[in-house]
Amino acid sequence: MKNLHDLQWSDSTDVQSIDVKALPLPPAIPAAAPPWKMATLLLACEDQKGIIAEVAQLLSASGVNIVDTMQHTDPIGRMFFQRLRLDLSGGINRVELEGAVRDLTDRLGMSYRLYGDRKRRVAIMCSKQDHCLYDLLVRYRNGELPCDIAMIVSNHPDAAPIAKHFAIPFHCMPVVKAEKDKQEQQVLTLLHQAGIELIVLARYMQILSARFVERFPYRIINIHHSFLPAFVGANPYRQAYEKGVKLIGATSHYVTADLDQGPIIEQETIRVSHRDTPEELQRKGKDLEKRVLAGAVRWHLEDRVLVHANKTIVFD
Image (cartoon, rainbow, N blue to C red; front, side):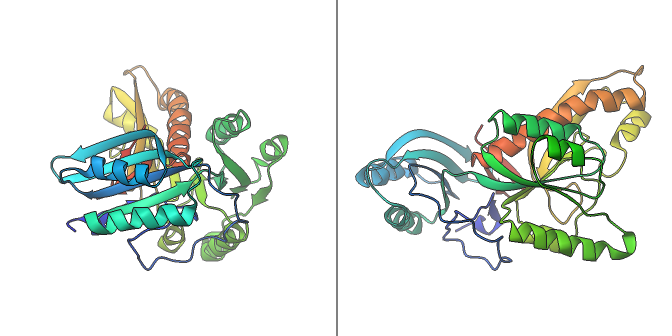
């Protein structure tokens, strides 16, 4: 099956796959959820004739109603991707559905992910700047983000009042350069014990180690305050000012071991001019950062994102 070794998925503990890989242990699995009423099926394989018809026929024969479907064909890579929303009220259970899907994917050489509707457990990590944190929490309180924000972790105490206001547990875990590995291990232990399934870096101004990232493959979402791949690393607004750019942007991406090189989920730009100081660029950019991060998080939680060859397919 050509190129499927490059296929990665936005993962969760509600996932089964025919693509078995030696990955680190996932976080502690939450308590058993009730039977699925709705589910999302993501498929990927080499492009070939009749895929959509075969998938629809199998699901119909299994008593599953397709509520919504979106697909994309990459004409260069000759890959096919599909997202289906499934109504399981006809009585089929998860085991039966997975068995039927696996029979089809084995025959067509597909990789798949099957997600049941439930709220994922999320941790937000931040430093001193709070605009992205506050925006996420407001959206969460208003029901815009289908998740359970279980904790806020920071290397500074500044966000403690915000966490208290939203009644979310807050953990201040300072970073001392000589003991950064120890701090990371403490954070990992905390996340594991809480069954965290997605980490959102809301301007967390620390570089995570490869060891940390490997524990949450494609389940750490970052916001970078530039239009990547331009201006990676620190002080992108200063870099943009020095280059005299006419557009600035924000980028939300999955975190990988390579700094600011992970698959991009969402981006936005805004026009600027030579009159803008670095401080003015930062002020304008903050609005972009909030929208871009919130959009990426929501799409991940709604199982709309898959990754192939370090690029994302986002069924928005």
